[in-house]
Length: 491
Ligand code: GLN
Image 1: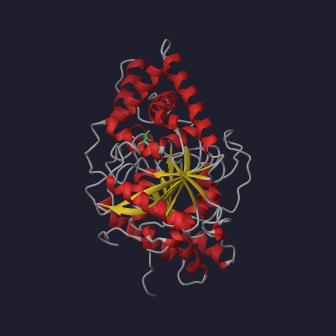
Image 2 (image 1 turned 180 degrees about the horizontal axis):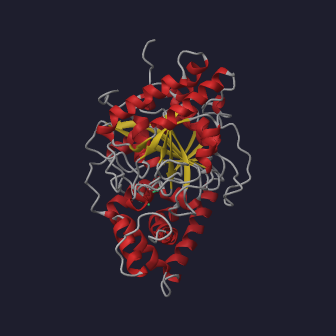
Image 3 (image 1 turned 90 degrees about the vertical axis):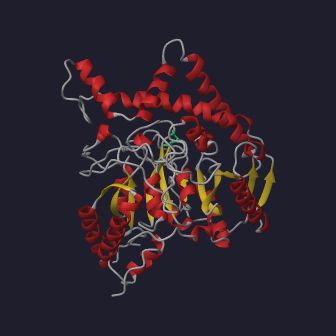
């Protein structure tokens, strides 16, 4: 048998599996071998789940044989290590949860399993998904496959890096302020954050509950659409999921650019965008326009400029409440030598959490404290409403809003890690979208300094199909998404 080509999309693997060109087991074995060979360079995984993958692959082969093969049967997938996996260590990249083995699968993983996907491993992230570079991981940073001295973005950096490096064709991330879209952009792949309430958070380690959403990474719009379709939808175990039907997310692919009205908030883009990113995004805008999309320049989103400060009140506030559960008693890291309960708790938290997580807990505790609550948290919630209204008004005239995903390309490891504000500024264009709860995608749209540039498209609530239509149409007239990083050892 010739070696399996691991560089193809998930939908191409699905076709070849169904045609009997190779088995799910052979695909899993080849994938595990490549992932293992790439790990010394990338560090994209916290845990590689060989046994689980092979067992799932055998089950997939049985389904293929029985003719019961949906699009994800036998397809290798990487899962961010923030998602609970039954019997498989789930760490949130924190010393606090090292060795923690959940007794349940989260809903997203449960649905992926039901769809027949093959879990290759749990991917690296910033601790508790707090960060934009995957440098804040207890298990060491993930490297960007385009340049191993640079970050892959974050917090879902492992999931993005392994897809970009052709380790797995698809993966799962989570996005609270940009953690799917920004690493997708920095690694040159696609990543979609859904409407808040589209995807169940049940069983996903909580960061900021009013903002967190899990979502798909892939190398083309079809894979992203298919993967999302497998796990989106109402879940009785997460009361914030919406009882909105899940469409076939490829439903609008045959329309091309037809009917797309795209707004560009030029004044939002005035500060801080690198020249190379700006140029690539301008080219992409021209491509949309010349292919029949209607482009409206200069739409106004003035309050969106306040999204970053609003986020850094709301997200840490929710995080400080969510992370109170790690007390060294119930589960997670416990400092054994405490003289009394209070000291044991303080030592467990002091030693179990990393610096960025502690910074967020302190920020959030402060913002929620008596006397400051009204000035910070309440004010932030009011501005959040203004931002939501502003987007609603903008969407009266356009279907999509286009910006760069990130103001720059992948930066060097260590460059921003000691400067939290510089790190936070990476999410200037992604954070407003979480504040409003809207769906947004990052798609590759060019190269600058030899590194990928990403374009963000934001749609109306629950209109992921329109976002994906635009991503698919753009991908059918450009080949940025087909660019691949230099081959790593073993690949
Ligand atoms: N970079 C942002 C933060 O550190 C967003 C992280 C995320 O989306 N999980 O909070």
